[in-house]
Every structure is written in C-alpha cells, then in structure tokens.
Amino acid sequence: MNPLNYFIMSLFFLGGMSFSFAAPIAYIPLGSGNEVIAVDSANSKIIKRYPGVENPHGLVATPDGEYLIAGSLKETPVPAGSPVDTPNSKLYVVHPQHGHIMSEIPVSGWTHHEAITPDGKFVISTHPTRGGISVVDLDNNKVFKTIKTGPSPNYTVVTKDGKHAYVSNTGNATISEIDVAKWEVIRTLEAGPSPEHIVFSPDEKTIYVSNDRAGTVSVVSLQSGKVEKNYKIGKRVHGLDVGDDGITLFVSSRADDKLVALNTRTGEQRNLTLSPEPYHLDKIPGTGKVYVSSSKEPLIWVVDQKSFTVTGTIVLPAGEGHQIAVVK
View 1 (tube, rainbow, N blue to C red):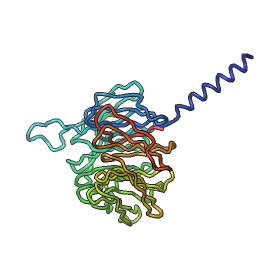
View 2 (tube, rainbow, N blue to C red):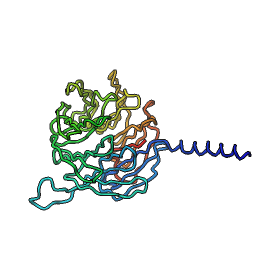
View 3 (cartoon, one colour):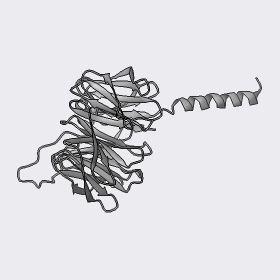
View 4 (cartoon, rainbow, N blue to C red):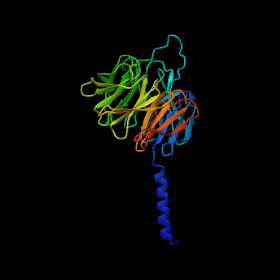
C-alpha cells in the first residue's frame, strides 16, 4: 500500500476510535455502597469505580469533567455544647481519571444534593437538618458562605448564566431564589407541598417540582413566583428530568413502581412499570436514554426516551443510585 494512503487510512481509523468515545460518562454515587461509579453511556457499562467515599448521595462534576464533588450523608458526632455550625460531615473531591480523592471539605450537617455554578468555581450543598446551604469555594477547598433558605432544603439548580440559584425547601413548600453575585436570598417562590427535586424547563422560565407526599409535579413560573399548574403523578414522586425533546418530563413514582412520561404541552401521561421503587433519574444528553435508579435494589434501568421502553439494566456493585452527574 502507498505509504500516504496508509497514513490517511490510519488517521481515519483513529478518528473513528476517538469518535466512539464521545458518548457522555454518567457518574453515579451509590449511597450505602460507599463508592461512586463511572458508566459509559454508549453501552451502559461500568468502566471505573471510586471507593472510599462514605455514603455519597449528592454528586456534581466540574464543567470540564476534571473533578467530581460528592456529598456524604454520614455525620460524625460532635461534643455536647459545640456551635451549631460545627463541621460534622464532608464533601469529597475526586479526580475521575486516576481515581484519587483529592481533598475532603468539612461542612456542617449531612449533605443531600449538590449543584455547581457554570464556571465550576462554587458548589452548593443542601443541609436538610440545618435549614440552609453551604457555598463551597473549590479554588480554596473550603466553605465560602452558609445561607439560611428554609426548613429541610432539598435540591438546587443554577441558571445557565450563573446569576441565580434556586433551592427547594421541603419543610415549608417554598423555593428560595439566590443572587449568586451576592450569595443572598432575594425572593421566595411558591412550590407545591413537600417540594423535593427540581429542574428547569429548557427556556428557564419555569421550574418543575416533584412533591413527594402530595404525589404531584408543580409548574412554577419564575416571572410570577407562583404555582401555575399541578399534575397528579402518583405516590411518592421523586426524581424528574426534561427529555432531549424539551417537552417530555420524566418523573418517577416510587410507591406506584412506575416511570411517567408527561407531555408538558398537552398534559398527556404515559406510564412504564419499573419495580421496585424507581428513584433518582437523569437523561443522558444526546443518547436518547434516561437512567433510572431503584431505591430498593442495586440497579439502574436504561429507558429509551422515544419508545418509552426498558432497553437494558446496569447492575450496581452495591448500594443504590442517587444524584447522577453527566459529563459530555
């Protein structure tokens, strides 16, 4: 073969190989399994495990995918009479390529879920037992500020421009709007009863809220700060995410053992049986897949967004899947 032709074919082959690795990586904290795993979304196979992370629940990745930040549900006892903000839990900063735990950042109160600013500089961690959030400065690996939001803060989302963050407060049916430049609560929005997971609509004009005990999803207008609509989903509603089409909202109903596909334009609902207890979920952008964990068994269901069928499962080493972080 002509050396030049061989060279060109080699480049083509290598280019094809590199393209095959373009599928997002899904990082999944395993709670009681005390580790985080990496899943190649192209084939939904576990490709790496990160042990030594105690009871991880919340998880985010920096935008460049260089670091994972996992929050622990484990608390350590503090001496009687200690200040209320005495650190008794931690965030783990993990390097996903070589698997090392780079640092452990002390925080006060066990952490439920995490969010990260688009510039990758700050992580927001909710502390249900402390009634607020910690803002962690990743440049200095320490808590930059604590903010009171409301009883039992649960979940946080940050706008694409990084100017505002929103925190659901399960204990008083509200959402706190935070000015990120000042790190202050500037407005309190309505939410449905017992708000937990929240997600933006694609245009960021709306927040969808899962209401666990009420079994509903609330539609909250960011302009008015009011609940515009409630959808009855089922019992023990938990995880939710907007599909790749920007229209379909996928919602898990734990007690009904079902995943619901809600058309946010028409209100039409489709049900898919998943047993036992579908729990956290995330779409895997660009793949047409939704990953749904079980709160009772160590597995993830792989659901096709269009056909709304289970196309596979991921058997976890142990524990249960919680907040999934996807790196494109």
